[in-house]
Length: 558
Image (cartoon, rainbow, N blue to C red; front, side, top):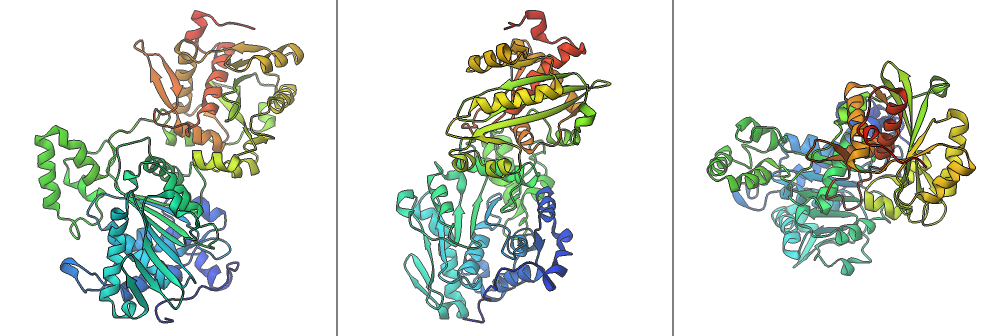
């Protein structure tokens, strides 16, 4: 057994050899999420990365097809883009960085075989005592695909066959009391698992997220578990797969800070020419190895002749989601508008506010906008959320609410609803310093707080409904300012997440207003952007920079 696995040492702070490994991290930084993770103490252990890759190539063999019986040799992209990052990146305490992963790739690129190799490594090569490894999917048959590949690898490997026992739907390793099984899609039946490794296959076919959530929580007792989802692009944006796809994108782009989440998506850009062989090669890393270019060319000819087949071609061959909504704010433009806003810089400058109270059980947002001169504006945002159920709310929306509360970006008010007294107190505190000329608000569910702020606290509150008449002018101005780099927002991570979520709705006259994505299922918040647009509307009116649509049609003043 010793020759097939390496027992992990105790978790320690990187030092000595580990410290040397830290210097190599730059070589393995793949995206903005990795870069920021290094700043939080993550590092790359080349020895651990090579150990995982070496174990796979030493002990695993193909069990079927033209490579039957031959050693499993990793393709360069499999080694460098998946195995090395998954098993090489470490946290400051020496444990693996990634606890959850999402790999999205076109069909026939060998993702199931690679997933089987990872499952086998977690079962035998990683040295985890009592490891429980599971395959999950929409049904037992789909979950068994990866399991059968592992079974075949064990059967043709003399070393693995010697220590593993196969009994129908179970592979066990008696020396470590470990096993690997495929699961049914019956979530309630999976309670009580103590999973170390989970391969979740073809997530796009999953009808709900109950099984996924159940399995994710089953890893809580393990020091460094791994839940790895592998899939081809789907079509349903009201789905678990789309949630994971979007979360993966936001982590890679640094919009959400989650050092534990690994993401890799191979797909043709939406604007790419789907008939171009160069597009095919960019989306299919195993083209020419497990996948023949002539097969894709044949499918492409069919799609050219049969338009109804084009979406099928784009989805399965190019890994494109075929019902994707367009975001309103380009995030590269948003990033250029970052930079802090000091109190000294804002002192004695004209200020306006926007208040989106939303629902008492969800986020509430306040935005203040300052005219900085030369057509430039500064923006600051504040957020409130009920403290009770914060962890569950974060799981639902797939954002780190707890971390944002801890870091001061959101204030959690006691109880299961937002306590408006906290909002009132903060607005009074800010008003005493910045003296906002007006604060715009949506009248829905806000009458009592607005009355207090106006009649008792002496603030000027302006009703601003959320229709096209009120929002179009400010929304278009907001878009122009961000596009031109004239709106400094202070790099608030909550607001950045909301900016990435927001889309726009248009009417026949060309008016627009911010809106949540149609398939958001409540998890894509945009309250901070709505509040910012409202504040800018009052700022534009007060500063005389541009007349907005609602000014010509009137507003109701309280």
